[in-house]
Image 1 (cartoon, one colour):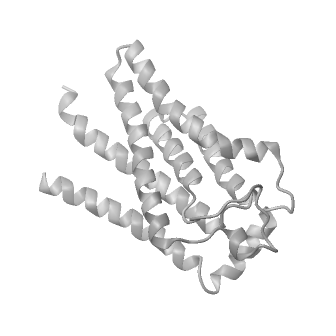
Image 2: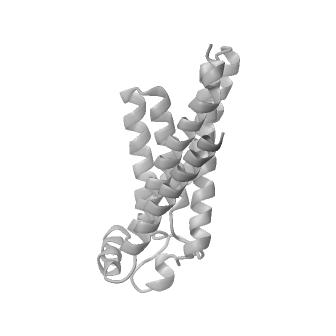
Image 3: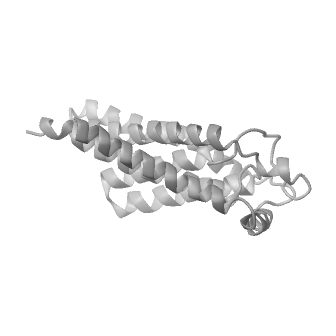
Length: 207
């Protein structure tokens, strides 16, 4: 049990360290290229219905995926499907914990607060920007689903959706590029941690 706890601690620590590295990229000289990139993605009037829909779809799809797997598991009395749903749900829970912890620790303002003449958000949003919670949740869902089902027709749409969510947050003017990159790392990493935990917890129940 001590080794198990130590392994979890090490994995979580690495995720946080990698995410913190993006903070270094988002400060000092790197800020120049980042705000230029953010400006090139964010239009003066970010009113695209498509990108608003992609952003809004994050929570609905991330909730629907594990719920659908769990429902199918109960209907078919399939223990493997149930475990897959636990893995997806676990990845989302882990990414929320890490993302919210990083937001509190770093407390980075949203781009429009620092650059009101350059970045135009689709609605007034203030508060913590790093990392992008929408992006981390989308990538946690996409990565977990890809790890559990491993079919190209699942993996490709899942990551196209997650990538679109990340892009939408920049298009809508509410996140910097490094917010989105860090969110993708946190989300994908959380999915791997959850799957590893799931395999450890259910290893003795396969026989």
